[in-house]
Length: 277
Image 1 (cartoon, rainbow, N blue to C red):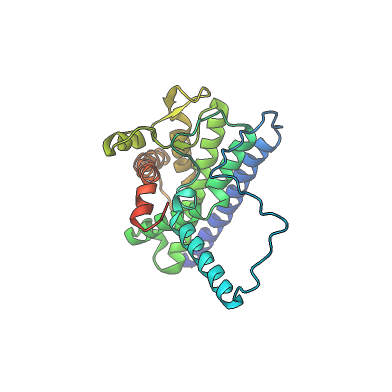
Image 2: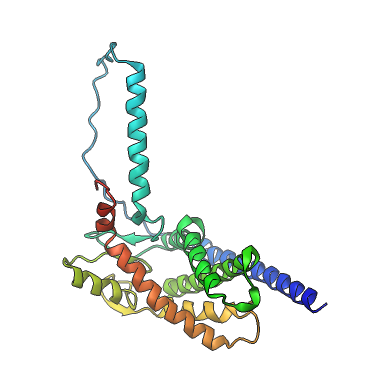
């Protein structure tokens, strides 16, 4: 009977967890949706040379071999797919960031909402990161009450995902209120140590509305602390809520600096992997 009670309690916690996640994500997206975007969005810079139109009277080479043409198309498709697979820095794993040399302008509410959704819910990378973190928790056996196997991993993944959504939602709302920059910008400097210093520093400092003056990452670490507090709602008791919040802030300090480092040197990593870009 004791085991049955524990199982029912775990199912109840997971149900409450799902409801809480949904409420946070919907409330955060709804808060932005109610505000009408009155600012014009910045048009991204076009890359490459404009394509020249072919003359209308140009005739196709009638002697082209269909099989050879199909092979060339297949080869090009494969090369493009391989480049995209290597191009993980474009946001698949690392999230949204500002390329080196780009001029940063204040974000509109709509742009903030889109960045929040991409970093939290709509990008595969967000889920892959939680899967990885849950795998570490599984290897450590933490919390021990959740056991092992697929069932234990599912609970740890749900816990990580819930804490991540809570932290990201609070951080996004805080940055929108303070008008702080939520994106990482790649360093305009050169050299390994200056770029590394920039990556670490930007995990603790961000730009205000001017996009030039640096301010402490209040919203980022406040969101991490809040996510740790909220996670005690479904984690096995007893739990010290403030200790969980503190551990979440330490995790953000380490993980955020590491993520910024990978974003900063993603071009070099791609070239090591064989990308032509």
